[in-house]
Image 1 (cartoon, rainbow, N blue to C red):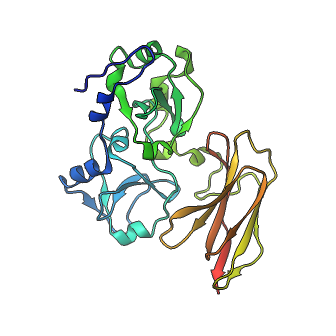
Image 2: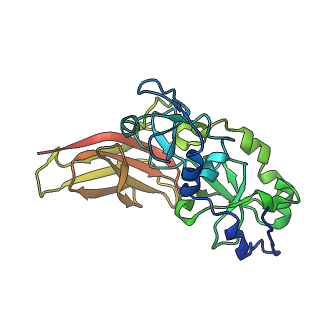
Image 3: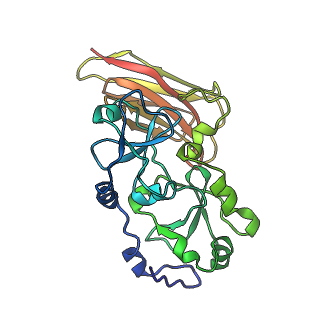
Length: 295
């Protein structure tokens, strides 16, 4: 068991890094110790954890996309073992669209922090981190030995999370409500919570338009894609252009912090626009509405 020493500012001493070294390598070692079930294309039910020939494990969500578990620690907040992970062919993995966000910790499951910051956070729904403002609050939420429930999140995946409102009072956050408010990672994906969701990203509010000045890109030339958001962009909000190429990986082509902006692209493919609020949560979108062909 790790021995944590915490001062009144909730600073975790350096020995904590020796206790929470949880990486994809650990996931790889563990996956080598069991024989998972197998499935063929077309036989995979949604809301299932799947993997190919590599150690990477994905959540096949109810929107038909794959969301990666960034490490074993994240997976274990949702499931106790890997025995129900379904192994599929690599071609099946390649044929399913990949989401641009990863699975985050199950709300309420653990407290988290990063090594370089003394702040300790509770995890709320949709990957929102809420600063626990005092050691007394942490003790009230997770008990006297709350330090045993604290995980250090690697810096490279901290960007999967967003910062929400601090927790000052007992009534600001309920561990049981957060934990029991979800049953699987699909419940924790922000856009799936919208009423009227129809299985793919939609311009569900009719406020976002995306146009292009050309439908083909000859070799060595470019196209200009323009997005206009007719709603009020929240404080700190922004729009992102995303491109979808072979393998269905979504890449950021550009970001802007105004309600109308353009991006110049040189590659053929399908292009989407997502509007985010100040907490980096999507509030409007159009996907695959612009497709630029090679010429």
